[in-house]
Length: 516
Image 1 (cartoon, rainbow, N blue to C red):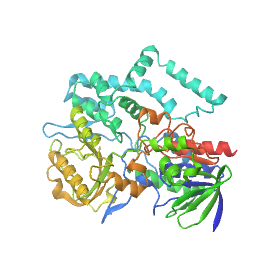
Image 2 (cartoon, rainbow, N blue to C red):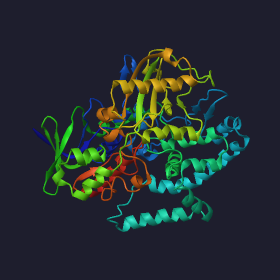
Image 3 (cartoon, helix red, strand yellow):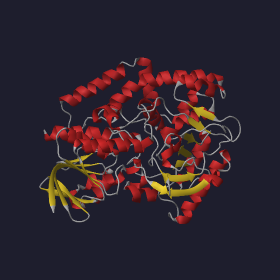
Image 4 (tube, helix red, strand yellow):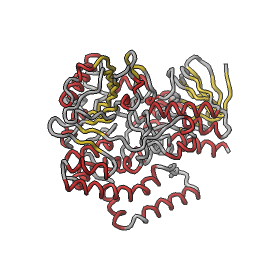
């Protein structure tokens, strides 16, 4: 059996949905193929314990590009933005803890409890980052030029970026050059004397990376997080997926779940479609893959089609999963001793950069940290329908948990990870074990199996400088591949991972230009 489409999109994660919708809205016939029984990928909501549902594996939605929301019409599909960024509780065993606000005015009182000097420094920090943000957005909020095939429009674009950099003024421009290669710990300690403030700011720069606060180059990720932080989505990643699915259906995309692509079909020098696990052939003039680059090139394309050097570069693309996911079903909101009356949707552990560095040290030796660093999201604070009345769901990303654990992953190791996580939480919220009525533990190996992400890496590849500016490898930086008609449209392409919709949108624009 065979069918013919203009474009077949592999993978119905948020980028696959984005690319498919863009293409369909511009008159292309599009089929979206997803191996799982639901759309959304790591952003999908799913039941993990009877009556308890997640809001997705990942937590951050503030990187969603506003222009994508507008162009896809997501507001008309029920997407609602939060009025302000969610405050984040950094709990302490003694003292008042720290609630981290993005807004300088909101943050002043909280920071003053730890340092009166830092409250004003934080205002200056926000002002400095705001001045740098337009330059960083010129690079990471726009398609990246294919440096191997520059045309006049690409040269013009590079010129615009250079002018934007120069317009910073000499002082800020030279400071940007100085701080980009720095480790995030050094730079934040230049700004703040209160360690808990620096640690709270550093967390996004370290997430999903084989890095600690003293690793060179981590400051780039902090700058990008600050510059590309827009507005959070009410309801978390699952709410974004719901709106994207509605937009795709409204645009005419045919979505097929439980349709696993097992091979790319070729005709001559280019693609002619895909083959599904049941043998069905889907004919398509163009194919867009939102799966990660390793899954595409090393699993769906026979090795003899790949040039040896290209295959080697793809194999070396770093996808070392270093985060595990634990979901807790709780009979009530955990009481943090430092703020017993506060119920926030975001909580992070870690009050000292050196402590965070020690948590990272373990993963270098294929070990779990004795006291892991935790990123908690409690979606039921804003969306109580995810759990029975009065109950809560806690989504935990456990940082620096190795994919290649010494001795391998088994149920015993996963139980040990759960125990270390609960022991860490119990230091700040004693009694959390008594509240726990169900749980799910997903190691990096489980994440790879469940969501099809190579190495268990939730961003489809590490966000190191060498893997951001040339992503995934040379020759694929402009969403094209060595094969005519085959494109990348997922987080393994520019500008990287996270709930952005940018790779899917930029790839769709490229596909439309090439077809025209």
